[in-house]
Structures are given as C-alpha cells and as structure tokens.
Length: 133
Image (cartoon, rainbow, N blue to C red; front, side, top):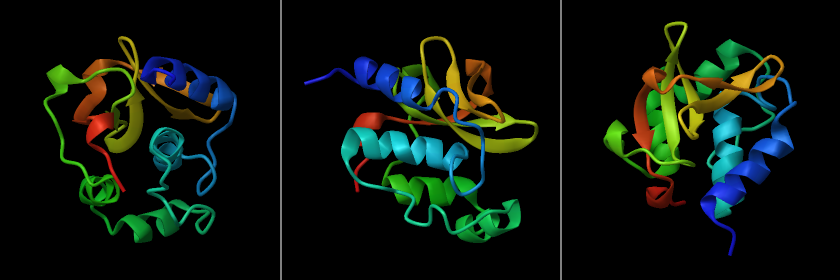
C-alpha cells in the first residue's frame, strides 16, 4: 500500500500544471480530488455545475468553514499536529482557501497550477485520517 507521502507526490504531479478554473479546478476541487484519491469518495458532487465565484458561493452558503467540515465529516485539529497530506483552510488575500499540508508549506491552486503558501497562512487543519464519507 502506498504511503500518504507517495500518494501526495503522485497527486501533486498529476495536477501541478492545471490552471485554476472555477467548477473544474479551484481550491475546493483541488482538496476534494485529493480526498477522493485517498479515500474514494467525492466530497464535492457539484463539480462542474458552477463557473462563477457567485455560483460557487451559493453552493457553500456563505460559510465556507462549516460547509467544508460538513463535506469532510471532520472537525479541525490543532495546527501544531498537522502532517503531510492533511487538509487545510488558509488565509489568502483575506479569503479562506483550501489546501493540502506539505513539508513546510501548504499546496493550493493558482492561475498557473499548483503553488504553495507559507504554513503561517493555515487557520484550520483537518487530519486526512479523520475524514470519511
């Protein structure tokens, strides 16, 4: 069985040059695809049904954190216990964005593909092992 680290490396390589596109490859779907890759269930059944930020907001009902936790069936853990592969909600330009904990960074999505944020951006972390469908 592949380790989480090996799976994360393979997953990141598979999408490293995929540009941000709402409803196709945005921060929520980047995280949802990772969960699906590891756990086999899709926490984002609305994929492909929105193409604007406003449509995306309608799906998350203006409470991104609560919707995020509901879809993952997980509660936040202490940031200090975050390990590679865990899911993160990070502050970026005064918004919460989804990401995946890496080694000394958080992977997230940019206009050009996968990019990184500092671990200082992490506001909430969810253990990959606690997530279930």
